[in-house]
Length: 140
Image 1 (cartoon, rainbow, N blue to C red):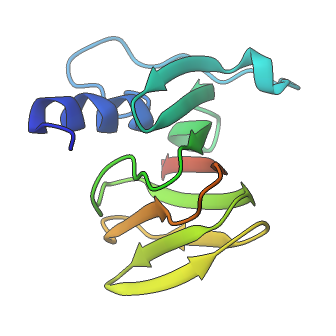
Image 2 (cartoon, rainbow, N blue to C red):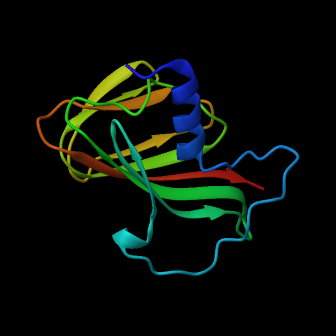
């Protein structure tokens, strides 16, 4: 079990520091074509988190694009909510996504959309890794 201070650190890492308060604004996201190895890797007990792009764009106040290779039986955190809207695309493995109190089984090519402040979460229910890519944003 992950303790509360660690959960907060993990959620902030996943959010990519989108809601900076009083600090310098995030950089504008440049045009880019990236390989998996170019993501900023953050190894966690539950799996490998990568952040590929984060900052703002012409149309978005903030955005983060990343991936998580989730270990068998793991969840990065309990179901939660945040200001950002989020899309999640499962590319490998099987698990369950909780969205607005409903649990759905997911596998490769499953897609989740969670609106701003909608409670959601994911757990790997299989004996193999589950990989998903996520995109979180706040419009201008």
